[in-house]
Image (cartoon, rainbow, N blue to C red; front, side, top):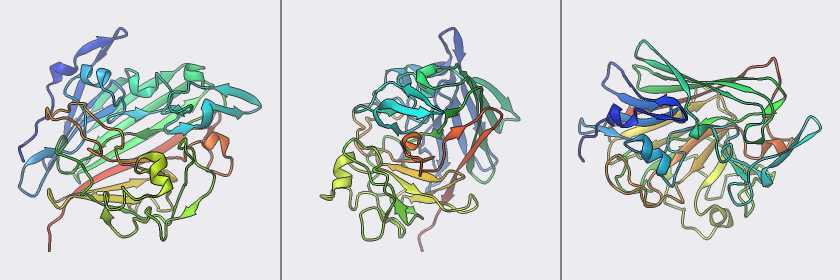
Length: 354
């Protein structure tokens, strides 16, 4: 397994829509390094030490801005909004008004629409080489959503090998909001085969079943006795090929699990015996969405290798999909005068086998 390096900053220095783009790097005292870009306020690289003392890049992505623009998979590492995940038929009613969004996924609205937050150039500010703040003002009516939305996303790299992501937003009109980070992880190194051998643990007793269009049915179902029971760690690939309707609908895992954990306790974790790296996820969000990279194919990553199907997995901390149309789900409504706040922590540990 070779040592990885951060992409060249010059490959991220360009101008899009009359705004400059950059690569920003942060390092901590233990040697961990991350790189971010203002194109999509996204994570580009995450270098952590493995059990051989090598720094390996555990986040999928591309080595230039053009790579992100031209890729089939547009969401690598990105801040996703205004509404991550799906809204059924791209429609919802709010405060007596009907709203229609772009139908960009099987008749649904997905991840904020065609020109969502992942394709915007965010303003930025770097603080003390340990934190980056990104800012974006989404105009009233952008992608069909009501209200001007003023959004901040902060990334902090701690000396405990944590990436802390904080979201804040304010609106001028009653609106809906659901933000997340869409990093794909492979704890054996990006471009290093698939992630089916990772041990996944999700501390959740319940998940949200979906219909054939991948919209939650409204049911909140127990994981006990199903392929969605990750309460005891198991390999991601153990049941992924099972003849189970829910897996067939999504071509793998693409499901939300209920999060009742306080932010001080991890809701999910992943571990690679090959690299010895463990990822823990902590969040204030009511759901954790597991996506197993079911439709990845042919994009060439930073390593120069093609990303395979299941080449990376996502732990997307978020509110439930289609919440604007399912009032019994936790509310995603943001009112003028209120502030939306959310936090995600990705913590990396090096585990030694007994």
